[in-house]
Image (cartoon, rainbow, N blue to C red):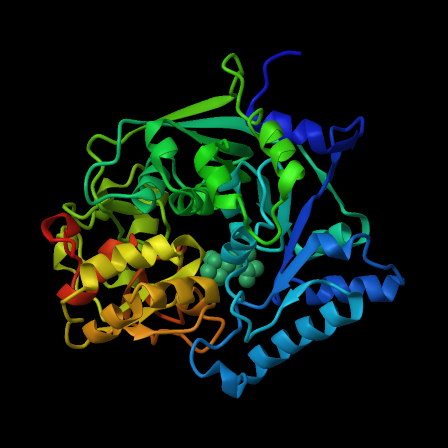
Length: 469
Ligand SMILES: CC(C)[C@H](C(=O)O)[C@@H](O)C(=O)O
Ligand code: SF4
């Protein structure tokens, strides 16, 4: 057999059939479901009188519309409450595994799947959510799908797909102090642009990727979609297996041994040919901060807000001009001189235990600057419990951060945690387009350490100058 990439291998293992026009049918192993993109899918099935093909291969949880404070009292916002109630009624009617709102395992679907061992190497994982790419960290072929596709998977456990191109992202060198997976992702997107990965599945390679924890790999893969790719992949290795071992839904005993033996084959063959390659040099990587309304508009913390005149063409000049107007920024302003009024630490990009540890290392013994509202929102109840066991909640609370219940929260303006117009936020999430965190809100994407540093400084600041405690 000719040499294959990791993507090719997973594809081949799940291929059911290919039509003459190149469309293929893929078998889907795992289907994650949340309240936003599932109601019409369930409704479509009911109208068609079709049962779910394999409900036991679904895991459902509410995350986007859930309150992150006082949730024991129910959901006050009517729209949010109806969404969650609809999910609960649907999963009950169709026998779909569901994690209830007050369960410790509840959280953001992309944090929950891996935590439960639902996400496995070599699996095909889908969800009606663009950041499904997160699960690629396990060497799973994971991508977001639309609501009609959610219905298709529910009905057939398969999905029509076109084969993507193979793009290798090779990170050269190790991570410099004060930088991490978020900075790698932002640097990559800054270099290739938000359309850079169009039509491709990206495989992340290089020593810095190997050295990342599963949390870091998830952060990196999470943002693949912001780089335009269909999915992101990291080949599974001992770090992966150590994370998955013993998780509630992971294989056990002899099945585990057989699974690991197979998973070890899930690497790109050394002779495999990639359609495209991108090389990212990490030796001068600095903490990254976005200045615009797209993740590609990013610079080093030591950099400045660009001059629209630097745009490569009229369209780009116009786009930068508009972004700066929306963001309320003047060309040439040093990034460190930009004051903030809000900080959001959480989301499926950076709401895992390691992210909270990283932020706590900066928050410990310091105080949130006056006039800054800072939220820490664990990605799941299990992350929250772990953080509390380590005393991270105390560190945050003593520093003046709010310690919340798990959910998507301020990552997007779909629940009670919204920003007012004009408020500038240092956010560990993955999207910064106009209105993302609330109408008129201004989002700057950063790492957890940089978000915590901004919270205590009241403006963006270079975390490399701060002592980690
Ligand atoms: C609401 C959901 C469909 C959406 C997505 O697909 O990603 C959301 O999670 C987001 O991050 O914008
Ligand atoms: S945390 Fe943000 S990016 Fe992730 S699923 Fe929720 S809304 Fe989407």
